[in-house]
Length: 183
Image (cartoon, rainbow, N blue to C red; front, side, top):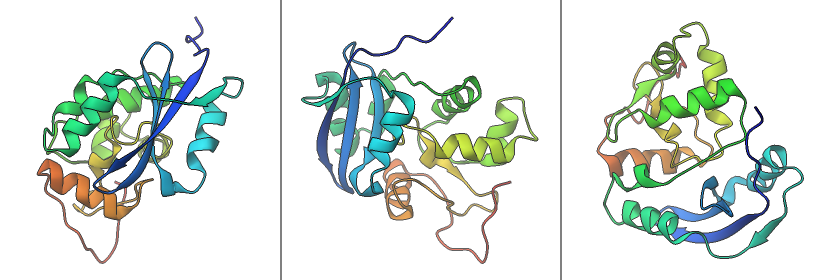
């Protein structure tokens, strides 16, 4: 059965303590994308990739989504869990993204651990690619995935934001390392 497609997407720019972001939501009030503005055209590229024929208009984000994001940045680190989201990813991507949502606030795991959690321990690289394709880069908390050695690895919003988000949530990680690994 095909996934329900949105009829229209609305985007709004918001200011956060770590830069400006874009919220993209559908007419039913589901978050479809959260991206940092300085990701250099990634928002438009991701929106077109996942929703090529859907009109995108500027307008206010749903009140519940905006309020949850504001509460999160104001210190309620559990506020993101109430945001309803949908995506147009592959079945594998959505499996990874749902598993990301099971990582508790303040906890980090490795890509290898994430692959084990979806019962596919050999899919570490595929998990990394799915993580990188996550259109809801804060609400679906890909920032909680770090290298096996406890160091930060890539984040679409930049490592400076990943560092801020993890510190904001009280997570443990190493900020510097001689090398990085995905396993």
